[in-house]
Image (cartoon, rainbow, N blue to C red; front, side, top):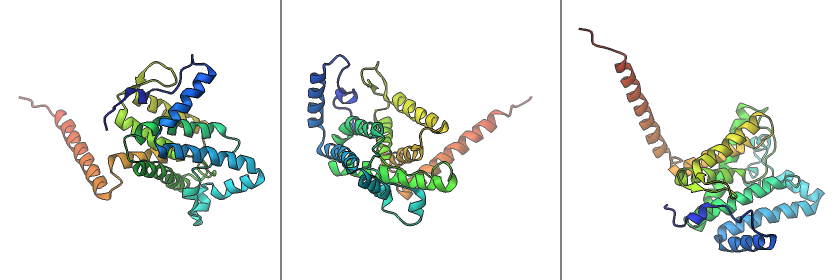
Amino acid sequence: MAIRDQRDLHAMGSPHSGGGAMFGRLKESFRRLPRVVQGLIALIAGLYLVALVMGDRGRELLAWAAMTPAAVLHLQLWRLVTYWPFHPGNDPLGMIFDIVILWSLGGIFGRRWRGNHFLFFFVAGCVGAAVVDVLLYLLLPGSFALPQLGASGGAFALFVAFYMVFGDSLVSVFGSAPMKGKWVFLAIAGLQLLFFLTGVNPAFGIQLGGALTGWLLVTGRWRPQKLRSWLASRKASSEKRRRAEEKSRFHVIN
């Protein structure tokens, strides 16, 4: 998947644009997005507003849709799928973050993949993230027990795809100095880990699961045969390196 237009890798708008000009640029940028990306953005923003307007009923809807690991283990399996389009009313920044990632990275990959492929990748990132979060709950129930809402899993799946495909491309984030895409990803991932360790990022399990799912999908290693082949090659490479290190320790003495 070669880069056909470097403008895809730059953030939208300019800090020197006026308000009206900025709105016009955003409107035109949204119009150029693939339909599947437009639909996902509209779904996330629309459900956020619906839940907000519904008040108490909206909170009941969010409680029903949220991905709670303990509830999933009690066979409420629909939560693996229903949680990601919703965002709590008191977390507009989380909703905006997911939309920004969809707008920017979704615009890149949505033009290079078929619409149904992109939709599968994003939704699979969200569902796979929920599964990983449940597994982490089994290992560390005290750290991964909170209900989860939002599409961070799909967003981090896109982050990993961007890291693997465009990691060496120069990008500008909201007018910043150009830097390699892989450093942008690693900086965001490091910040999320730091926030988790300091207790202010309860969605870290979802983010980690989305990144892992994205890696499996991009590399194709979700297929058992391909995963076994990759693990075998890694083991052989590690064994070869170990033997070389052991050989270098011996010296012939005349």
